[in-house]
Length: 148
Image 1 (cartoon, one colour):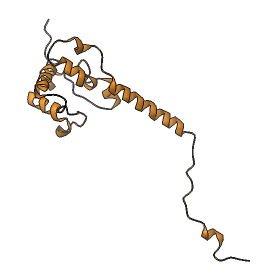
Image 2 (cartoon, helix red, strand yellow):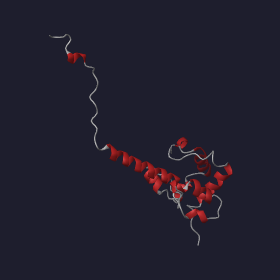
Image 3 (tube, rainbow, N blue to C red):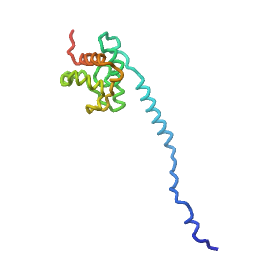
Image 4 (tube, rainbow, N blue to C red):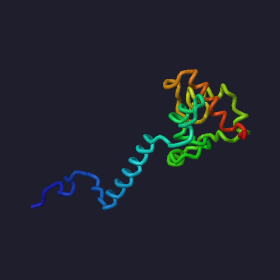
């Protein structure tokens, strides 16, 4: 007996199942290692440098800025490299002369996205205006000539 319509027509049209490979555990492991390393790096505070400096703004720089801009202010921290960021180099006198104190104050307070520098977070909710001014003054010391 022949049935109408044929059985092949009555089958639901589902897409073919995705072939599973044995690569996914390795991809998951790699993603986990990168995510874990990034999380640990975000929690780590750099050692040395401004910690022992008694100048106003040094402790603030260490707590809020050194993780990206580096302890020396060169913008060469490992976290910036890991996240493909290029923070400013505070040791370059020519570049620092081009930036006004008001610009530095505003970019610290409101973040860099308003100024075309999306990697710079805002610290207006964490720091008072006076703390930001002392931080700007401390950042200026990186490009000042060293006196012996």
